[in-house]
Length: 268
Image (cartoon, rainbow, N blue to C red; front, side, top):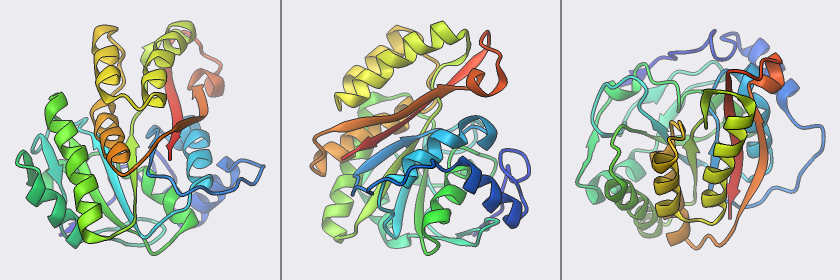
């Protein structure tokens, strides 16, 4: 199965030279010691808005060969937990293969997960992570998982299964939870709500994150991928999380009346 880019030329440049130039501009000026993270939280808006946050996140972690990327289902197409288990993603900076072995491990351990190609065709939340990761390492393999379910239990089961699959396979992988935070509220409102969600992530508490987001009507689109990522990271031995950067679209556009929030977090 071949998956072609859905948002190249829209969320990020389609031309590889222009894309590399843009990623270079997004990179932090300061060099960081790269940590061996279990998971990261990274935004998925257009690079001009959220690229600074994503670039700083990935500049601060070691990039292994296998990357498990979980994103929310914005299109409503496909299975509630859709794993693309074979094939290749055609990307401007080079083709990316699916880690079929790891995908199969995960599918075998999650009853509600399905091998589903259709959920990935037009979904941007996973795609936009890949060029920035490729900037640091070309020879990556990915396990793309699009999540449409709102079930806390199912996402915690998914997280546990990812941890179990990594332990059994002996593979080293980076887990990426792709999410933006509050959508289209004022800067003050977004910052207040997002801080509540960020605090729960920093506490490595998936239940608290879930309850906080839904009880306070926080429009964090990737809350379920983040729940799964926290659960997996904890079972893999993670003990701490760090907020790398928080900003909003208003910091780019100057419009603070209708912003989208972006947070980058590293879980070790």
